Image (cartoon, rainbow, N blue to C red):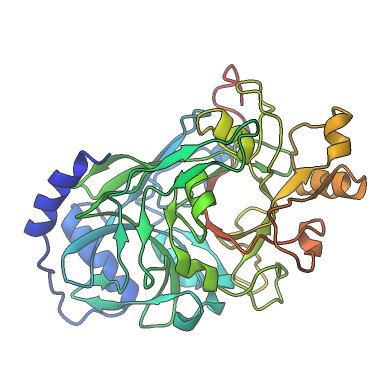
Length: 396
């Protein structure tokens, strides 16, 4: 995707002068009006939205297309133009909002837990200039992602270099002048493009990004999009931007609705089955050993975009509680794919699964089977969870 950098540089130079709207009526109205004018596509509404099948179970209603093919899934989303600190154009997507009405207006996931984010605690306060969002932070997309597995065990890798690095000011938890918090991820700027980018249509302002699969409630194909990560190694393994400011988000190990936390606990696995193509592989070690296949993480809940209550517990800012199979379970040949939080709880109680050795000392989180948090935030908006596989013949 680096080949797009030169084209982007030319386009960014041409389009860096903002179009000014007369007296915008609000943050979102201003952004949507400018986006509609620049893309030639009507702003999102229930009437203009793509009509997916009910069995597709699509959460982000503004999605323009989804390829549900396992191992090659992708989503096409509206792409917004914004401004870098120096005034040049950058391009981003929006996937969540902390306010119910804002989420509805944008056709994105409702994530009320994000209301706890402030500029001092991991957020990025932005301004709106002429209907364009102006960011404080910068991402360098020029680095080349590198990962080399260890030996004899693939994890930890001996080389792990992110393909994109954010500065100290960048956070995808964007705070609008109104106080609403959006999950807005930069996709392209003059330095290059996000490593998950597959195609980009500058004229229509759309972007297609590669999705990952996970497990939720015992069902696979829990499609999500990793955008940025607060720690280097998981950023490399998940093909995300290394964005250290996310580590300031409140608060690790607190996942209940009444906790003052923007995070929601989930459980990646360290040393799951390695066999590719059998529908059983899982974990960081498997991802490294098998040329970057999905880690197949285990998630607790789905977005609930019809529930405007403040105790709606969904957040795209996932608090990683990495698990590992115990030495005794490995020796007894018990290692298999973990398929739900209930399954995880049962395995921990049985003494087959425990907190990974990489997790720092500290109290366990009862919400996540008593596992300890790693203190790493993985920003992965949930896109869809189809109830049936589109490609039953393709191994999951």
